[in-house]
Image (cartoon, rainbow, N blue to C red; front, top):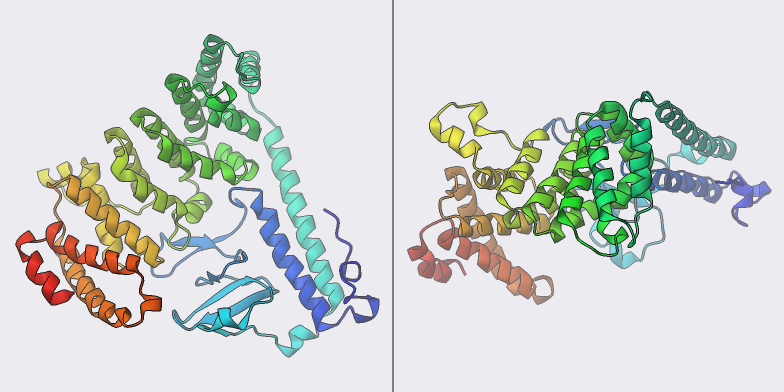
Length: 455
């Protein structure tokens, strides 16, 4: 990466105007873009500091706010890099920020720009800002070099290295002409070695090995051989499980798209065995605080939402594995841990009951970051209760649901008078929520009167 300095980047930032407000703001923006771009190639920045919400110790996120081109809430305790567009959202009364850009007036109707420019900040020397950029680049390069040196020092003995190398070579050169017997034997070798901490680290030193394992069927010309895919996922999970150094290798060297592809494979698969294996890889990664904060945090929950969405379609063993993930990251506490009653023990062994309890509590506690997430949680909870009539809602949830349904019924009447802000989709969900209150979670006989009274 080459940085030419302020004077070389813009005709408006010439040598005579290096201290101009525009030039200083330009360089601050460069810092923000630099921070965003340096972490884009990684799944997560394993060296970043995390902070947790004072009200919920399981809600953790990066201490340094990571900007994008979209508005994001500035969380409690987060430091804001210079050069960002900051506003106060009038609807939520929370500060938000994004990468600075020109924005039409029509897009900030419900916000108050609070971009602060203290006088002393405007007088900052352009050379100091430029030095800050150079320091950030130097610091990042040093971190990368340190990690490469650390991971390059393999502690693996020579005992199985030759066998390991031959197996990796077989996987590296997969093609439509590959001998499936040889491929299977190579996978068996790597699976046996993956449980060794040293070989787990070695397997994750090069991102290409995991890429080949994930795309095994494509490398073989689209042939889907379940037992080979099963072995591939077992290798990945074995290398990562209880091996923090291997997980750090993976998170710092693998591209961010890998995790997205992993979740896509989970959604696309209809095999309980493969679903369970994929969840095993995710479970191993979720032991890392940075990974958990990015994919299962309250304000960054793309991974959690995908698990919630896929649960009803999973096989029995996969459902149990998914619930184990929720327990590992402290989003779900097994009932048997606080009670030794026969009922509590049975419930703790019932993944659908655990999943239902989790969603009920999330809704009651208001732990949903958006209306779309709220609808996902409620619709999946309704779906699992429709399929399993043995599941029962808690009294706390029923009280919440009664109040929420009445609130939405009342507000929907107001929204209907404002057609532009109340869509058919909104009306369908509100009506579906009312119906679910009686048909799914309550007394079906009360439905007819409820529809007349509440809608």
